[in-house]
Amino acid sequence: MSKRVAILETPRLILGMWLQTDRDLFREINADPKVMEFFPFRRSHEEADAFLGKLNGMMTADGLGFYALALKDSNEPIGFCGLSHPNFPGVFDEETVEIGWRLATRFWGNGYVTEAASALLKRAFEQDERDNIVSFAVETNTRSTGVMRRIGMKRRQDLDFSHPRVPDTHPHLKRHVVYAVSREDWQAAAPS
Image (cartoon, rainbow, N blue to C red; front, side):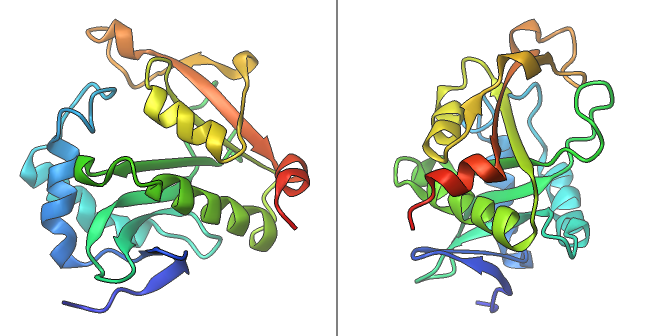
């Protein structure tokens, strides 16, 4: 198996560059109805392959990108976690940074996303000196909103929105709730 270039490591995980050998996992998570329950689409194998081919090039020097998430002991890919600009004009300003993730169902329930997202927040606030990070999900997506709470984010009802890229054919997926954490609040809650 190829060596993964690590961007960040946690006790159990590597967040890093995508490998061509991650293709099957990426296809799996983008087609799995449970993983994609709150999205209005599933990606075909061809669409997933095309998007995977772009992900390494979308990573930036200032810490933005959706990193492959792999088990440290085996380098086995399990999903992704990352930071990006949501690019929803009229919803968030252009400087807004979101944190997001997706994990293959067979790895759910182990705290991997909480571990990876916590490490990314630490990097975002301490190394990259970001001021605020948001995350959002369909209101009924309690798995994701649960992670948001576990990593110290608070509900911001004033920022809730109707997702501009969700088609009207999926009205139950349009309304999104927003959670956020500031660097100040994160530092105050972080263990010393």
